[in-house]
View 1 (cartoon, rainbow, N blue to C red):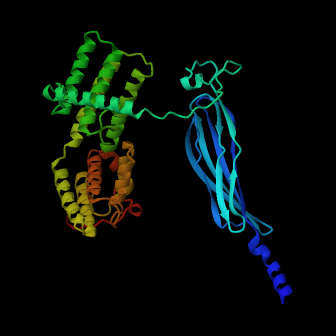
View 2 (view 1 turned 90 degrees about the vertical axis):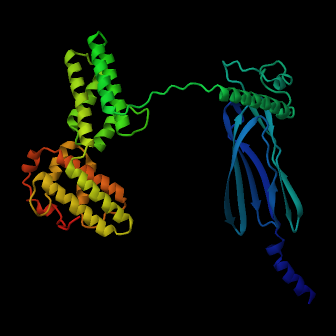
View 3 (view 1 turned 180 degrees about the vertical axis):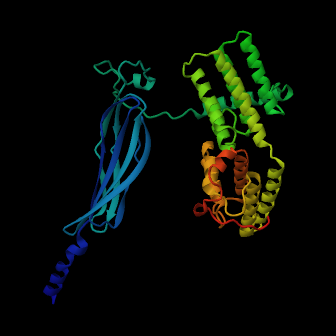
Length: 439
């Protein structure tokens, strides 16, 4: 029986007696660099076969460098029944001082049931950091004490251990600064500084008109034309910022673009022409003429009057706003369908009266033609929403209220000739039936 037992044992010996091995190696994408440059340093742990205990790698240190990382990756292969796994760690090292630095050796240790304890170490890697040419960097005292004259006066002949951070000195400095701040805070508390803030005017339109008047007087008194244009632009910017409740520090162009979005019915072509005229005078190098002063003053005052008129709701618009507000409250209580139908009915009824339309569906094409000169896609989308029978999705009740009211203001102020030329009431294919219920 003994020969058969031995044969059986030897047949299965490779399946369990094949010892696992591993190697640790290190490398860098380059070994010479200048102060402040970076290199990529990698550690590769290659494991062949199966180990009882996976190897562990000692944490590497990088004297003379700031390290970012590591990032880790691995790859595996299986060839002729043998498995190989390669683990890779990558650091990005930034050179912080000149000299010659030795990275490593770094070690990895593991254990196998057949071979016992095993270890592997990398070869030391020498990195040379040079000062950039043409820049006189002061040599650190530590580097100077280890430097000998030669072809490369910046190379280190030895590396001393880092002495660490002087925590005691830093603590004393921090305590002194903290004490000084406490004293200053106590003094400031007894003698608070007088902060002068320019109060916002209670009537932005009146304040803007006053600024325009002062700009005209200064121009007549001999002020430069471009200075006048700057004052007009500043008066409009401050007025629009306060009236439209926008952030501080915005430009006049941003303010006018916001105005065209929120109140497109305020003579959009005239507003656009005003902005273009200011930009040409201030940045385009155009010569300032007497007629430019008159046009700027006329358009600026027209913009202010137009926005003030657009903000004021007439009696019909006020009544509609109250109805939309009641429907919005009903919407928030969970009755979205009923609230939306009430909003549609109240809005379409108002438009029929203000535009002189008869019963039946709203003329979508004619109304879109009225909105086209305003160059306001939001109003066209609001018109599409109004013609929907189903509840609009993804919109809050307050937002629907605001959009419908803005649409009504724009259409109420539109040119009636555009609507009459559009054959109102004949665009049945492009409109939706309207609910006739009371709001």
